[in-house]
Length: 212
Image (cartoon, rainbow, N blue to C red):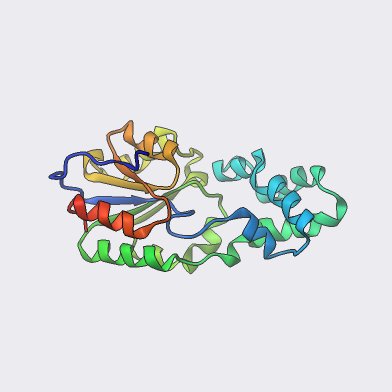
């Protein structure tokens, strides 16, 4: 399996771009729902209808608000799920904390002088919980899809960041857990690494590139 576009080991990277979910923080829809109910059938039902339907994508895209998403989702849910559905939409993030192993990587990169940027598909609720994620204290900018109404892997998402900060794509390196997002960045000349949750492998890869 290809885990990254490694490029030239002599290339001088200056900017490290990070995805958020399953990179800087863990994001498991079923685990999130299980924090709100212990009913197995309800967990399966709510997880499917909240996280794996169009409304979640539209929230990330910034084209609907949470109330509109809620009103649409409950049309597919039994009445007894409605209260929990709203709670999940409004409070799903309370279970999220930094991946400590990745927080250490972030700190090391910042200490070495790299500029750090978040590149995440996320809804406007991000602005409610972003201050609870310690990693973000070390970032130069936090770019989310809902703010610009463009989602990864659309190259326009990455172009927005490049233009805003006058970045050379050849000096950028992107870490994400989804191959189509890595490919979307690569179409602009941004090298990347497909993160599989193993921080030791990531460290080795970054070391081989001379980044760490």
